[in-house]
Length: 186
Image 1 (cartoon, rainbow, N blue to C red):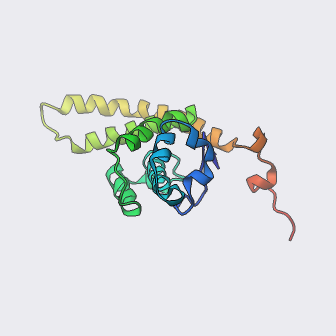
Image 2 (image 1 turned 135 degrees about the vertical axis):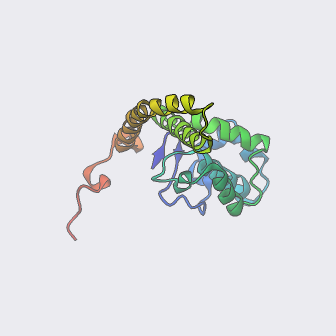
Image 3 (image 1 turned 180 degrees about the vertical axis):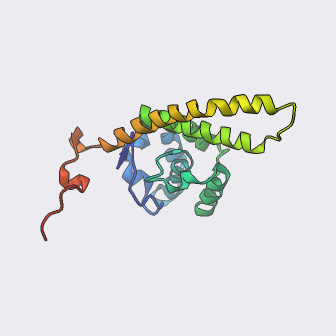
């Protein structure tokens, strides 16, 4: 599956070399900086770093199962897979900051931003103590939630529609067999 600019396989388990799947990215800053500084065999370290960047940032849960878990737990998954992963490293931080803008479509970026915002709002509300001082503000915020969810649903529909119209090499649409709508006789 092509997600915006990045070639991501359904398994996305980190076993494949990220740079072999995405050779075009070794020429795009800031990813090129991460690639260039890596002196490991076959650029294995920066490949692992990039998988962690994808796992931390890419919101498409169909291919990135890790996005379903909270951010701090995603970081733990990354460090378990790649003990040298450091999101505070300047090159990695730059990759994480630029990935949404360079590697995701406009629909994916809007979907990610809305989804992240909903998670933040939900966490915020869960941690608020209800008192006479805060009750009015909490009620106002909760009254806005239906509109926020409606907006998210619109963006999510657009995101799903864009994913469904995936283009393959040559920018052609998937045919019935490639979509799984037609099964050949065996």
